[in-house]
Image (cartoon, rainbow, N blue to C red; front, side, top):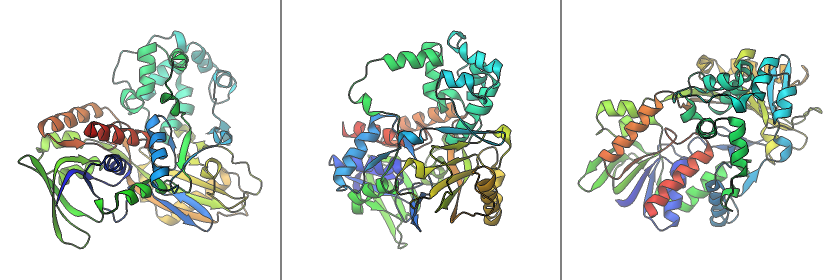
Length: 458
C-alpha cells in the first residue's frame, strides 16, 4: 500500500492534520493502536449524564478552533457543532479554609479578596513598575513570587497549574509552559501593562474569532473526533500493533500488524507522528539512542479523573466553571470541574455533573489507590467541599485512570525541542508533532495540526 502522507495517532492532533489534508485532496492514511479514534478524547452517556473520560473543555485561544468547527459542522451535516460556556459559568473558585471563594477577575477584586495577604495586595498594585527578570529558565513559581508575592503563588498560580498541567509551579518553566505570560513581561515589562497594551492593539476579523471562551461540542467532545474520523473513513487503520517506521530510498516504510493480526506495509513520502514521546523509541527504531533519549525526556503527570453525577442538587448553587484546590490546603483532590454549568445536556434537569481530578505530579501515589478508596475520597469531598448533606449520595461515580495524562514542560523542554529539530533536519519527510511540543491544550493541538497541514498543502 502507498500513501503520500502517513500519520501516526488518531487523537485530536492526528485527526485534525489528516482531516485538513484530506479535505484539500491530499492522499493520507492514519495508523492508530487503539480500536477507536479520538485518543484521550472519549465522551460517555449513561443514565441521563454525558461525561468525558479525558479533556472536558478547551479555550478558543486561536482562530483555528473556530475555523475547524465551522468546517466540521458542514462536513458532518450538523452532527458536530461548537458549544461555548455561558457567562454564568465564568466564575472560578479557589478553596481556602472551609469553603470555595471566588478568584479575583480584576484589580479591584484582587485587592478585596481574602485569598491574598495585605502585603501581596500592595505588591500587585506595584507590579507595573517592577523590574523584569533576566533568567530565561525561570519557573512559573519563581516569576509569580518575584512579581506578585507568595500568597498569589499559593492561592492563584499553584491551583491554576494544578488545573491545567496537574503540575508544580516550581518545576514548570514559564517560557515553555506559559509563553504568553513570559512574553508579557519580556516584551512589555509588566503583566498589567502588557495586557492593557495588547488589548488596545488592532485586530483583524480573523483575530477576533479567538474569543478565549471555554468550548466543547454539543453532545460532547467525541463529536469532534468522530466527525473527522467519519470523514476520513477507511483512511484510518485502528487496532494497529508492532508498528515500526524506517527510512527507505526516497520514501518511508511502515510495517505493522493490523487488528486481524496480518502483517501490513505502507510506503509514504512524509510521516507525521502525533503520539506521546514514550511511544517514539519503539516506532522509530532507526534513531540513535542518544538523540531519542533527548526527544523522549518528557515527564507526564498521572491523573485520576472521576465523573460524579447527581439527579437533584438539593438547591445547591453550582453555576461556576469549577473549583481549584491549592496544595497548601492539603486536600485529596486537585480540583472539581462543573461541566453541567458550562454545557447543555450534561445532567438531568435539576441535577449536576462534577469532574474530580486526583493525583498529578505532586501526588502520583494516588494512582495506586483502589477504586473503593477513590470512591471514599469522592464521597468525602462530596459532603465536605461540595456541601451536600451527609444523608445524600452521588447517583453516578465513574473512575478513569491515566498514567501519562499531561506533559510537563520543565527545564528539559529546551533539549527536547532542539532534538526534535535536529531529527527532522536529519531525516527529510519526518515530522515529530503531538503534545511533546507547542502546548498541551485542545486549541494548541488544533493549531499545530492546521499549521502542519497548511505547510504541506502549500
